[in-house]
Image 1 (cartoon, rainbow, N blue to C red):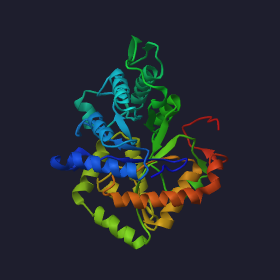
Image 2 (image 1 turned 120 degrees about the vertical axis):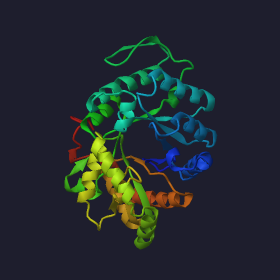
Image 3 (image 1 turned 90 degrees about the vertical axis):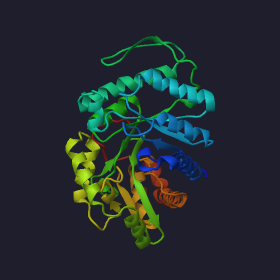
Image 4 (image 1 turned 180 degrees about the horizontal axis):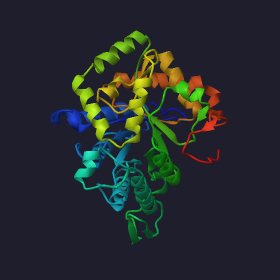
Length: 357
């Protein structure tokens, strides 16, 4: 299936902590193939202390698809930037395929503590800028790289094999905090956010700069009642999950975690914007639930204010991706000619400073 013009659509790979070991490899392969067949540009691969290695998952995806791009989560605490650049260049050498890198500044507080990483929140983004700058420098030029920063230093370091220019990885960074937005802007990266309901942006006359994305799950059908029935079946009330969510909130310094929790208490029941799965610790993004027409309108609202990258939650089956593709096609038509003017007028998203259109 063809890609959606002007829109980069990513799915998400299953987490090893949520799938039986015996089924995990086949599940990853299935989701990757469904995603490719649905026209996704790529697929997000998570990383944290409790999951299998994301680079090995990316390798599995590359071996079982022909064009899907793994979006590999990269945590500076795990690897030297040279090792990340070497992975990218090696995969390009093997497969002539492009990767995306989801640069992660933080993580679960306990994970960071176990690694003896006590770096304060905003300082982690300073480190991330240095880290990513070295990766880009190694991959973007055949010349040896010398770099001296607060956290990293390299001297006449060269990447072999060299990366073909057309396979330079796309870079994504969390844009939920001012420090994250500033890092994305410095790096020329796509800032990924957890969106509010689309009408709130319109009410605030807000727009976003290019290369800005959102993380969102979607459950949609022709009939809204059917969509909501499926949503409640997939994400039933879970008291244990709610307690886990509350505990995570107490120890997290994540801006996006706090923002979503605040939105959960404010969101009206009649909107398609649904945070119940997040509150039950089943996922880490808002959901849009409703009819094709209503969800297409909501997505069109995001597109009109400037969002161009959409990262979906883990698809439970191929059929769900088919429904999602349908509403994105409708949303693309709904936004229509307004795409060309989506970034004109309105107040620029706070944190990007004097953005030059």
